[in-house]
Length: 193
Image (tube, rainbow, N blue to C red; front, top):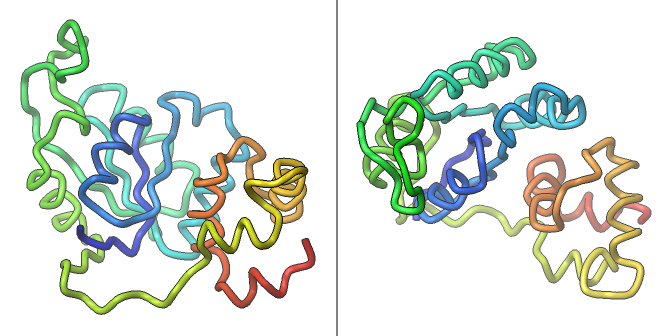
């Protein structure tokens, strides 16, 4: 597993699933064109870009380039790197037919192609033997603070997301990823939740 410092932005959940098998990184989905009307997610991307930088990894079809261009317009370009996958024609295993343009997307790429694309974009990729990062906020910490696994945890997470000005639709796992980008474990425990 390779660690990537920057936050990686992909189009959808299948892209995220494929990438998360290869890299240890915060991966945010745009929900395809859903990013266009999601002001909270746009704001989140700007915030994450300020903290760690973004690497945009979209499909090499027309829709991927439209999403990529949109992100260029809503996030400071100095904080964004762009990773490109090659045009490979074919169909993903889970799909019954070819895509509109007949190209494989991020989910259909071989792991070495994705890793190479991230490296060429200038992402900070640490190999498997790199020193372990400092312990961040864990699921156990979320449980201890009453943010998961207990009565009223959903309401506490919603209140926390509002207080931190984060999108309210973040899953508990996505919230954990974002918290690890915007604060330390000590800051998490110092918060009044």
